[in-house]
Length: 198
Image (cartoon, rainbow, N blue to C red; front, side):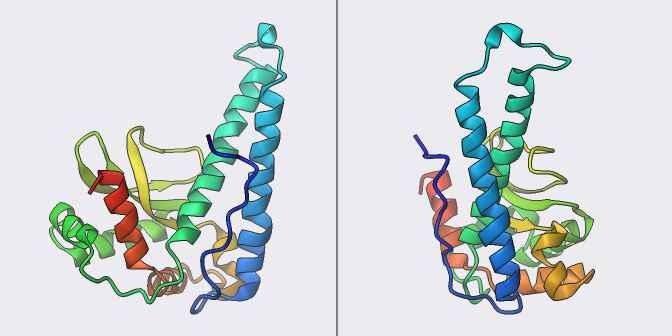
């Protein structure tokens, strides 16, 4: 079982166009803070009085709701950071072929994903949907909103302002372009292969 208090190492040294200051705040403070809160919630859940559970307000309800926020904040941030640090160039990974299949072409998918980046208030996620075996783009305005049951995130873009405002101000489009220039498609391909069992 995962140790929820474990902070993962940053998988890259630096990024193109995204400053060290942004990374220090985003990974060094925000992500690590979510890990610590997730651990705190898990510890409190072990001690709650379940006889007091109530849908209007109870410690059990509040902790379980906030557990989804903290847990997904950790998991989505890890998925975001894990695929950065590359040259942004897709190669011959199987996922490229699957994206082209499910979106008619890789360029169509790219246009769709980037447009969702402009539309999202929180996250854009390319996920493998086990329900139908297809790759699908989704948005989530908060860590625990709009997730799809039975779908595994593969390409994750953080669209919260903390991810880009220091470097790009309100220019979301420039940030999205910088994100794509830093993607590590080999890692993305490996993740996809692991998820689909190939």
